[in-house]
Image (cartoon, rainbow, N blue to C red; front, side):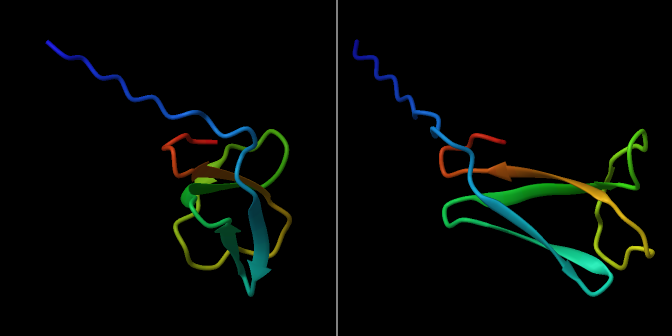
Length: 76
């Protein structure tokens, strides 16, 4: 019997992510080979993070949390 194990090394650094304002919403981009898995926003300290489902955000200041999956399938 032959057993083969395949292991992908985790990246040494998380992929770069850029979050920018686009009108009343946000645009998230990341480096090639990585995909944005989720974007959540919070209205400030102590406020819950909720998924950003598109559309416009009311005027204000927000904290943004982004999850990115790299080419190895590792989420950061």
